[in-house]
Length: 494
Image (cartoon, rainbow, N blue to C red; front, side, top):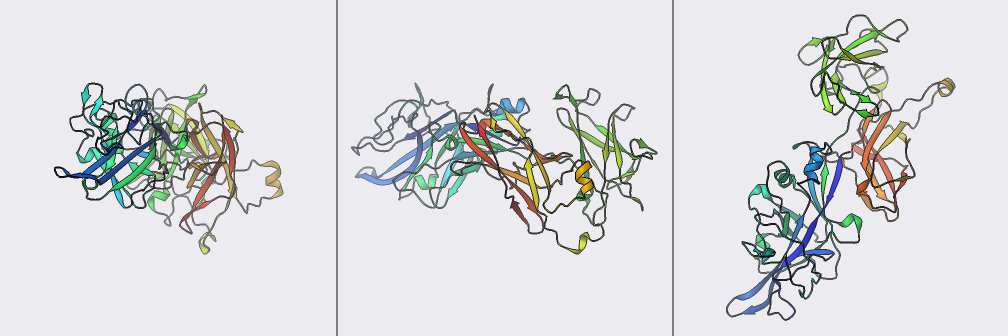
């Protein structure tokens, strides 16, 4: 699982705009129960001989459960989120269409609120500003005024960022990892975020109005403000894609990563003697019938030396991995055995590997364009929002043409694409509930092992009562692009 969403726990709009009479400002108004949020800068709607032309501002406050017994901090403690530096956090807010003017070519500041906790309130009126209460332009909460009207915010670069909008109606998707990590890791008090036009635009002699986002009270499930955690959790187990070292391949591609999954009574647990420490792997050839490891330990290579063992380590609870590089002899062994041990005589697991040669005769004479046929072998018709499901994918080459003997007596082995990704779309309207994460975070990259590809999905991120379909895409290095597969896989969330 490499994507989690945290919906806003509080949000509101605060403003010093004039009421309908254009003489009284709505600084005491509260809009905490509105289903939309708005930011604007209006210049010159009124003027006076004393103050000159007026400037009217509206700002957004939004807060998420980052610390405490639930939310981001709790999920990290529970192991659902990786450590700082291995995960990115994005603020996502979704444009609310309205009939009024929308600014173009503008920017908005995202700043951490400082100094004061605030209340959401019960106001609804975003037109006449008739609903008074806290939080508002002057007060953060009952009896607690802002130090600076319009809210108090951290001005340092680590607590303030700028998002740009070219057309106007775009959604906001901005990396706020630094702010979130300060809340969760560095102990900065979480008072939420303020979102507003930049200081230059708020002070400009022109108007920027009105940018609206959906609030957490909206009826649209996927339009609520969220912090989206993204990270690459793909485990690439090369037991089925194990290759001998070759001078044709870069050093990284000559490494094969193997995994050990220590499942005891239906759950993954650490090996007591290893814990989170080092684990070692020896490679052996097989006996005459290739059923058991035999003979001396085979040499393995690394950038500096040849050794008789490889050193691996702990990945997560009950999971260990190790990267191996080994060369073939003049007559390559067709089967290898990997023995996992603690270096002091205790052996934990013996596996089998069927290594292949890179650049075999004929493989370098054409530019390959592989096509795959895929299926999700454990797909169910319905899932619950309370579960995290693992989807297992079996893939084979489209032009696979086995002999009749293979069809009759052999278990079909998968062809495992080493770069795969998924997206999930709501069937009724084609809305992307989760898009392909093929950028820097690779948060929808597929894992794989000897049985094929797979991914884990937290179903609480989906609106119940709807059907969704999974799309798959594999990276084709020959064309330098991700190629979406023609088949999709439907399920319903209840």
